[in-house]
Length: 157
Image 1: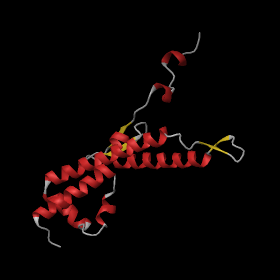
Image 2 (image 1 turned 120 degrees about the vertical axis):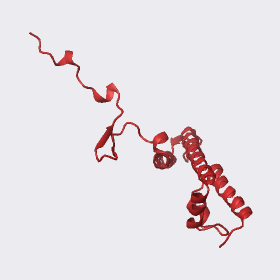
Image 3 (image 1 turned 90 degrees about the vertical axis):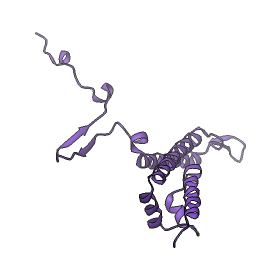
C-alpha cells in the first residue's frame, strides 16, 4: 500500500507514541488493522534518519517504562498478606511468586532491549574485533575476585 506523506507521518508518530508511552512492542502495533507491514516500517526508517532516531528514542522510553514497572511491582505489598477463613493473616505466596516472575521477566527483557544500560555488567564479555582477535572485558570488584595479595602468599621464614 502506498502512503501519502501526511499519512506516513501520522502513522509513524502514532507508532512511536504507542511504543514510548504504552510500552507496546513494534510487532503488536504493526499487526493491528491500518498499520503498515514491518517491511514498510523498516523501509521508512532506512529512508529517513530522523525517523530512525525517533524510533530509537521511543524504544529507550519503553525500556525506562519497563524499569519503572519493575519498581512499582517490587514496591507493591497490597496483596502479600491475606486473611484466612478464621480471619488470621497469612502470607499470600502465589502473589509473591507471580510478582517475582513479573519482575524477573521484565529484567530479562530490559537486559535484551538495552544491555549497556540494563544488562548485567558483572558478566564476562567477549567480542570479536575487526582483526580477528578477541578483546576480553570484565568488571569485577575485589570482593568477587577474592584474589590473594603478594603479602598473603609469602611464606613466613
